[in-house]
Structure formats: C-alpha cells, structure tokens
Image 1 (cartoon, protein in one colour):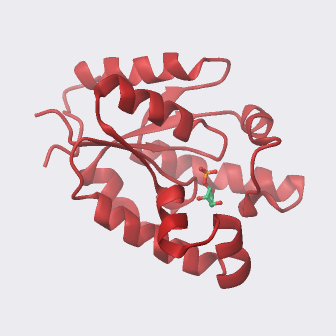
Image 2 (cartoon, helix red, strand yellow; image 1 turned 90 degrees about the vertical axis):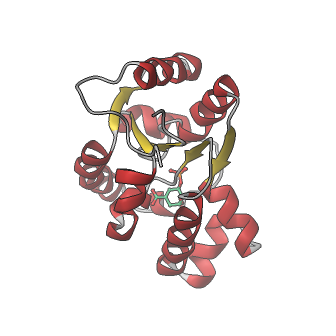
Length: 178
Ligand code: S3P
C-alpha cells in the first residue's frame, strides 16, 4: 500500500520546506511544515519560543504536532532539523510516515540558510555548529531513506523521492501506509 504520509528530515538548510512543497504539489497532497504549524499554535515565531520559553518548550510543541500529524492523510510533512533527535518522535518517523533524509553537507547547509530567518540552534560558534551537525547524522541516517541535495535543484530532489516511492530500493515497502 502506498504511504499516507511522507516526512522529510535533515539538517537546517537541507531544503525540507522547499522540496516538501514541490513534492506535495507534484503528488496533489497537502503540505505541512511543522515549524509553521508550531508558530500558529504558539502564536509566536520559533525564535521567540526558544528565547522566551526555552528549547524544551519548543520540543514539546514539536512532539505534540508530530503526534497529531500521524493521523493526517495524504500529507507531505517538512520537519524541523531537531525533531528526529528526540526519541519520543521515533515512532512517527519509523512507522507513521515514509521518511526521507535530505542529505546536505554542512557547507551547503550554511550557504542556504544565510540571509534566511533566525535559527536559534545556529547561534553558537563554528565548532559548536559543526558538532551539532555531526551529532545528528546517525539519527537522520537511521530514520530516513537518503536523498542527496548538494548542487541539485529542489525539483530534481522531489522527483527522486517520487521515483523512490514508486520503486523503493530493497524489499521493504515504505512505512506510513496505515
Ligand atoms: C531546529 C531546526 C529548525 C527549527 C528550530 C530547531 C533544529 O527547523 O525547528 O529552529 O534543532 O535543528 P529547520 O530545520 O526547518 O531550519
């Protein structure tokens, strides 16, 4: 059975929102960005939630939104870069959705986020950002089917995901069919 939900994971700047919107349009599915949904629910921008309530409060909102989205049908869901690192979200990525990891090098990621809105998790020194990037790679790899993004147009990344959905590598059908 084809999946009912597609989740995109990856580091900040991987292109989850851009690719997700293209993919959703291509499939005729809804597009949901968890950060945008959290902002609506909280009535505040992500950066303000971090600043005024702290990271833990943001992670709680994020986990609530993901639990809710596990019931949503025909949706492409772009998730925040830190969502897969939370153990409580593992079930969502493992079973509720067909999860794709948009792989990006740290250099390309930083290039892409330059000039975009504030990202609280990047307000640390270069070594700290690099350590955060490295610390997240194994969980992205474990939870998602890898799709490279460096040097590629978002539409081409979205097309690759469509191809993988039709013809998943290996014998396992993508999760998220229920
Ligand atoms: C975060 C990534 C952000 C947002 C928040 C925390 C992270 O989303 O959820 O600032 O921990 O990596 P993007 O990956 O869409 O930038």
